[in-house]
Length: 225
Image (cartoon, rainbow, N blue to C red; front, side, top):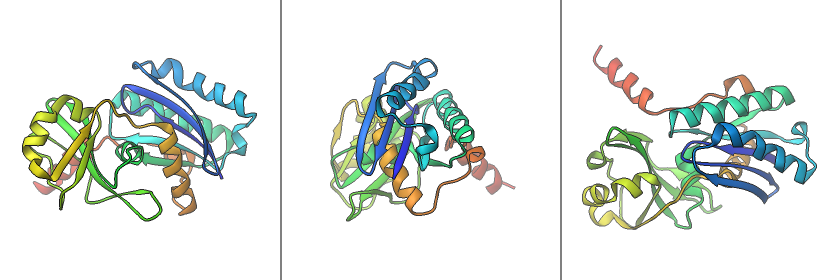
């Protein structure tokens, strides 16, 4: 299976080609997504000799994360996939980050600004693929949902900025946290391949970002009506 993958959900930007488990990736940090993501894709295509139509799908980090970054990633994935007449595989950016962390139980958290974090807890299955345990949410660090059990490892820029409040909230459930960890396209690609194999790829025009903050606000509004 051949997957082209993108992630622009945080301050890091990356693109990757995944071919039956072999990965080639470009990765940069610095919020230059609009100027670099297509150049990264072009570099990878030139290096591999692939054309877009050869891919089974384009996987992209669908969020949560930076609103601007998510729109760029979804737009690029949609445009490339539509032009090549291939499907897309939207992948949680929190899940991609967890997939890239060498740990069986990961509590991923991104900074959501306004003193909030996006978070989700992921457990690695027997095949080495992370699965969401619960829901992805946006809360104050002091209100982050408590995961079941102990021995969780924290990762993501939410931990870089809010680790004191997160550790106070989570207590002994988290054994440690990793600094400067970002979602990467190589992990988006691996999860994308799993999604395609499971029949979860969708049409290019359905390549939309998932902000989580808007989803939570909508649910709260409905609950009040």
